[in-house]
Length: 240
Image (cartoon, rainbow, N blue to C red; front, side, top):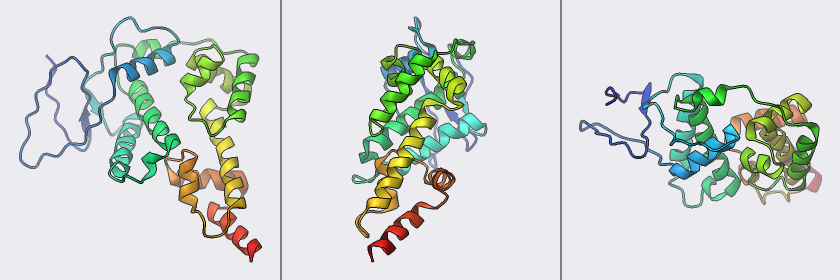
């Protein structure tokens, strides 16, 4: 039996399927909970490992929300809570929803101790230039696709971590960071081509899977030396 976990702004609980949990709540208790299918989390784990997981995934039950990785889990949860009540909101964009799912599962697997944590920290061989080049071709051919690193790695027949290491060595980047750059190019093109008043920056960015608009604006400015709103404003001036 585990020690009791006290829910505070600094601490959350991770419940593992198949294990009982007793909740003792006072009248002021409120709960934000997200359920992830066990098969989805197990598949994400196996993709990161590069091989099958022979035992069920079991998390440590107490999650520290004050650490960097723990904060990433919390921010993903808060964002899901924020957008989930709007039937016409950002979760209706497949890339946005897929990105949130990926962030939440990977954050848990890499931040929260579990029975495969040591295996995930073990050294991994790097994918060679050919798989990396093939992965780049796939991303450039369909940047609008809801890619995950897992699907991309499967497409070039290497493990997730091998592909990530291959990108790091060959391109000083990660597969998803490279994809974000491609999508920034598409966002820039759409904003440049848009008829004045027909779309907003938020709508175009969400369509391409942007989940954190502050980071998006900073990345956009680094890549194009202007803000997204400047691109739209310039387009409107040109149309006049």
